[in-house]
Length: 310
Image (cartoon, rainbow, N blue to C red; front, side):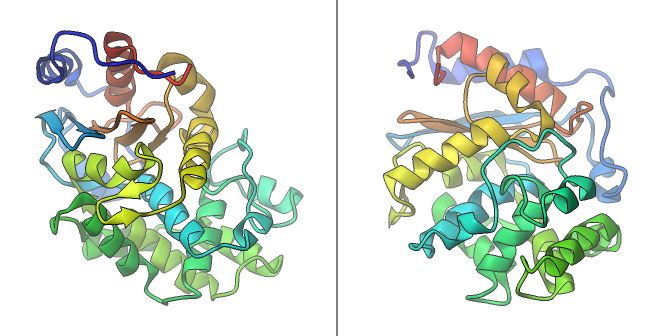
C-alpha cells in the first residue's frame, strides 16, 4: 500500500538526497562493451518525481540527458501490449525472473528459445521483433511514443553512440540468432539487434523519463488518454518488481519496495502506483549492473516518504 507524502515537502527531500548521494569518489564500474558510457563524469546525479496530479519535482542533474539503455524495455513492452489484444506476445516470452545474467546464452538454449521475461536482452529482442511487424523502424516509433508521454521534444537517438554499441553487440547478435533458430524471431537477427541498440541509445533526462513513465502510476492513463489498460499497467509493474533490476530484483524489492527498471546508463525508473513516477540517474554501477548511488537514493526516498507496495 502506498501512503501520502510525509513532511517535509518533496522539493527539500530531493535536494537533501542529492547532497547525500552525489558520488564523491569514482566507485563502481561502467560497461566495458559500451565505451561512450565511460566518458560520463562519475559525479553526475539527478532525480525527478512526476506526480499523478501533474506536478514535477527535481534536483541535481535532472535536466541532463543520459542514455536510457534498458529502461527502454518498459516502454517497448507497453507499446507491444497496446496492439496485442490476443495475448500472442506471452506465448513468445515468459514473465519469470531469470536467475542468470541478463544476456545469458545458456539459459536461452536450455529453454528452447523462449526468454524468461521481456526485460532480459533475449526477451527485449522478441518484443522489438514483435513491434517490427508494424514498422521496420521500431526505434523511431519508440522515440515518438516517449516524446508524447514526456510532453517533450528533447529526447533523441544518439546515432553515433548506437553505432559504437552495435559494433560491440556480438552477444546480442548471438542471442538473436538463437531466437531465430528456435523460430522465435520473425525479422532478421541483424535488423532486430540494430533496432534494439538504437532504442537503448535514446537520450532523455530524469524529468522526461519520470513524465514518460507516469502512465504506469495512473492505471495506464497517459498524456493524451489511455496508453494501456489498468490491468496491463498493473502487470507491467509486477514484471518490473520481479524482473526489472537484472539479477538483483529481490534485493531492490527488499531495500526500496517499489517496481523499478534500471539501465546500464545509470538510470532507474520507479513507479509508485497511484502516486508518482520517479527517475534517478547516477552513472556508476554495482556488480549487478544497477546504479550504485541511484539504488541507495531510492532506498532513502522510500524510507522518508513511506512509499512502498508492501
